[in-house]
Image (cartoon, rainbow, N blue to C red; front, side, top):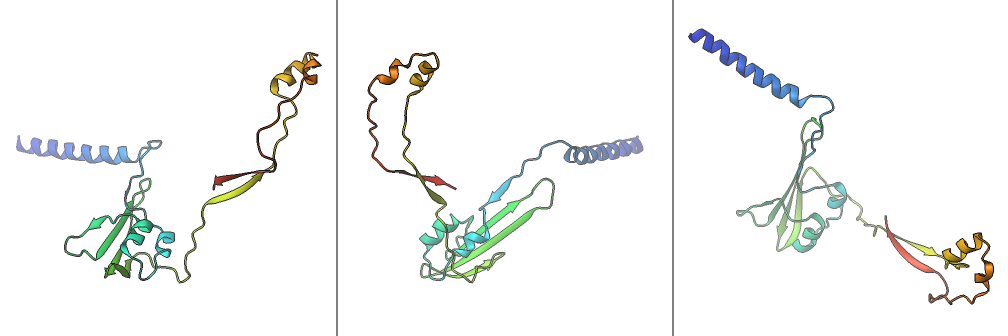
Length: 170
């Protein structure tokens, strides 16, 4: 009786382990990429400058992931992602403050030597003024031979002369 219970428990445990392995590696099954923590990239770290205050750092990096009660002058940012069954990638950076100004950076990122210039992300396009000859209704009636509409006076456009400026995000 004891031996059969042992084999039954061994068979059950092997079945459960193989099911999880098989289910995790099925082709065509979508696995979610779950990002955890603050998204940190090198461009953000390059914007950090010595003697920046906490408010400026908060604007660039966002709120810290860990708020340590024992170290109020240390902000820790942690980012973790496990893409499509690959190994987990975890990056962290710690910022140290003294007198409400940044004095040190420690972690997986190093600030760049050149000052970072952030582009606005907008471009300006000059759109020329469009001269509307006929309305859509006038064009449709012109196809059927009702050209007497063309003799009617055209309303003046209310837009100012010249070109319009449109800002588009990149």
